[in-house]
Image 1 (cartoon, rainbow, N blue to C red):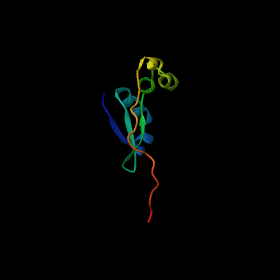
Image 2: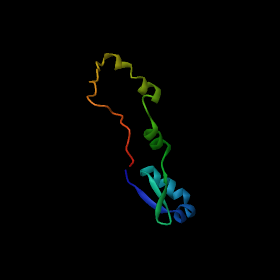
Image 3: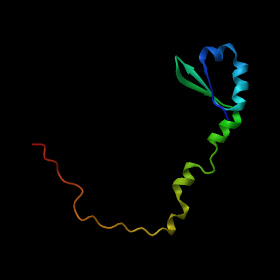
Image 4: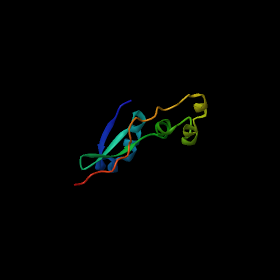
Length: 85
């Protein structure tokens, strides 16, 4: 996979060429010398955004019932009034 960088002007002048370049890897498009956009093929985009589980499944932690957890008691107070004098 190669990464190509082009200016906004180059992109506007030959979009087809840049789309072909994206078949070999991401194309960074700069604006005034700074990366502003990335052109990817739809396959590369889907690979990046593909997840096996959604956030609800991850937060549910179905195996958490098997975890033994008993936190130790704190030896001192975690709250104390602050003295601003």
